Image 1: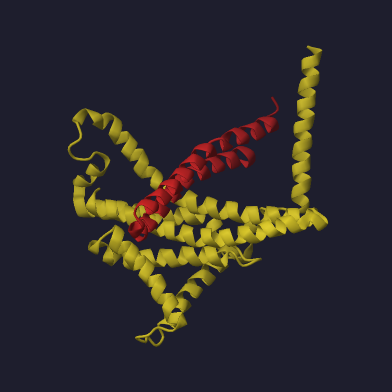
Image 2 (image 1 turned 30 degrees about the vertical axis):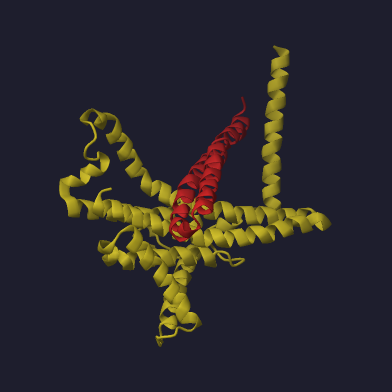
Length: 267
Length: 74
């Protein structure tokens, strides 16, 4: 009995120590500090806190940069595009091709919203790579809001186009009737988890990448002269993060297109 | 067991879920490369779709990570 108590004590002690060490390490270098949201301009309306935060600031910057790259590039459209015109035409071409391939001709009228989402997420991710900036896509609430808008819009589009026939999405034609007991719930859960998976994918990729960068940066400081090694790794990871930033914007948009396709064509 | 220790063990267990995602992502890319080796002309066509497969598989790893983070911090 006594030995069990000592063991528990030891466990207790070491767990406490670990927690203390963690707390101590966090005080020195806090890799999560970059996700801290602070208010720049306090606004309170009817008890709601709608302050202008650093997150909102970078959202505005992302929207403005996206707007200016597109308008500046197409300021004087030439037959042979210049550098800036090429950039805006490429961005347009990526999304237009994506919609054509995945949704079809009927998807053309949804181009504006898909293109806006793509630019917003892309510039949110890429501008977040600037040292000292804030990556608003690394917060679940931001990505979840965007994913919810897509999810609700897609559901409304599907119901508006097909009415009750939209329920065929959960039970395809030709399947034996008794499988409805299994297939229905699975398809329903699958459908409902779309908004979660879409938002968590973007959020987790961004948050993990940025935390990794800061943790490696912390190693570089702590290791002194041997810190060259983490710095070398950091250079590679930074390049990877740029790839991830562009890729996740692409994936976010292409999945939006696939959901649109499902709502319009039902499989 | 002390709650803190249980948290750390739980986070470690949650991270095991990433094994499957690792195998899955490896599978995605190996099939991509063998497909291109067999039919180099199809590179453009497969190239766009491979990212969807990659992203969907990778999401599983991220779900495991989120569970680990929830176990640790929430």
